[in-house]
Length: 139
Image (cartoon, one colour):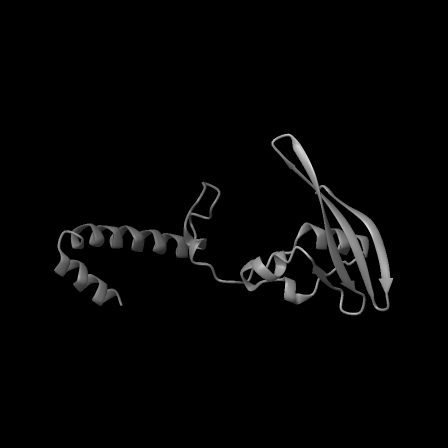
């Protein structure tokens, strides 16, 4: 991950880590220093890169600190619902390889519906009235 812990300062119930991130680009490297504050009680991190605040993704600096602190489970605030295996996704019925359960009745019905809808769309797109009629019917 090209990250190294350079220093740790204990400040009450929190630890302040200095993490060196080595950025490599076009055969050149540059060092960037980040500060990660680890809260002992809540097991939460705050990183000066602010990746979690801006993109809702844990940065490698926080992951290094979690590993250093031997954190086995992260707080639920770091786990987004779209990462859950229990979320219902629309694309799960689309066969992307030959290993997909092609005998699954849901997949078969989905593929049949798609074929029919593509056939309808092909005819309906030939005129504005037909297109608008189909959109109204589908809605």
